[in-house]
Length: 458
Image (cartoon, rainbow, N blue to C red; front, top):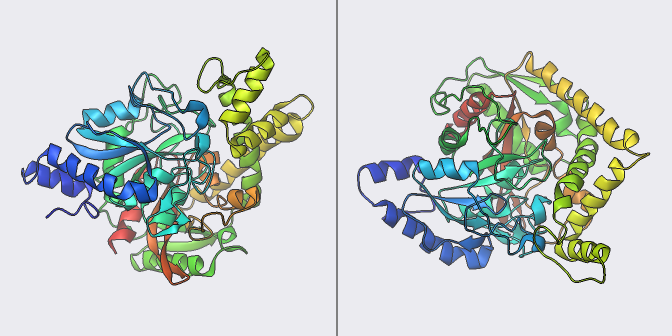
């Protein structure tokens, strides 16, 4: 009997090719599982009962699927219906993929835990008292709980890698420009990227083969040829140069996470990789830089959601009151906070002191990575400094922001990265997943997939 919880894309293709099961039966099996598990986890915001037969996939509710709601996890877009398919959705459909539904996320993709959604938090399949992580909370949960073979999330500062590390899944962040953003509701356009979430590294490579490439509808996509990501998976990593930043093992890193990461690094050495410690001195400035640049772009991108042209509209005595009430009632507190910060940093008199300075520091962060990649193939370290926190455990916004400390740099520098499960820690008698992060230089996705697959296989 087919076990949907452990089924992979590769295995599903094999049993479909052998006609051991029909595409319709495969889809129905996952729909059944979704109906059983979703009431407990709140991972799907909508389930498509009439999904056609095919490889079952879920899509973050920030990515357009024609004729279906696209809420972005926000009240302000609660009833917005997409008028077209995102490019990635078109590509998936062309490859025989069936979209089962749209997944939960933090309001407008702003959050670290998945608790900011206007439609309630997504729970962690490993422990229902804990968060799944964000902002791609629903996408990681449906994969971890066997409610979809894979899912599409999105990345602005670690929104696929971090929740993947907390749910024992594989979260993949491609190089900026490798995948089309056409049909992805923007948050911070210079950092956003569609991100596959899978059960295995091999599946991540298969999904990348389906969705990567230039798109005439997105001028930021690269015209570089897309390799077959699956071909490099089984190549030996003997002699590969692995960098371990000393800044990633500073105060604040959970001791169980540190032990699991160091064990994983030892295993890479056993596979023949050359490991050396390096320094990324701008690490200490990455979070501050990220949380100036992102709110600034948020302020600009979300200006269109004003109660007039799109989404939720409140009543007021004049136009200004309509604007104010629609946005204050339609957006959650974290979204409002980032809009205010972003508007402030872009305002006259403060632009040079904050936004311009942050962009200058961003350049220094890029140079940090350029220097390391001259002598190394990949960079490894923790995905998150901690394991999945309990619901409500993070009280202060700064706690949410600090959880992104190891992930935001790849987005600021436009690099590729992946989080793969590397063991478990234990809190209150419950085993919780830990993620190993592997980062690569721009457009070197094949290399990090190769290293991740070698580690995963071992």
